[in-house]
Image (cartoon, rainbow, N blue to C red):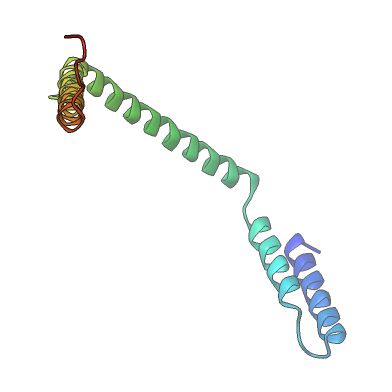
Length: 122
């Protein structure tokens, strides 16, 4: 008996057991698992090795392409680089501080107008 005939014989016995146990309704989980094992056993070791080899080759190509993209990015920083961002954030900080000081000065002068301090020295 060859392995294919053995698996067909085992599969038919399994189907008979399912039909007897489930009163004519096969169990879907057993059917799925037996189908998975059938798919799994169809591939030989050499085919699996070839698939693994191809996947490794694809991953290596992806790494080299990603490496080239990194090199391109490091060579051409583009319009926005570190010094430009420093200038932009410095100007933004200066504007925020200037607006804050102006607001506090306006608040202080408004409070002094509203509540003047009487001078009793003279």
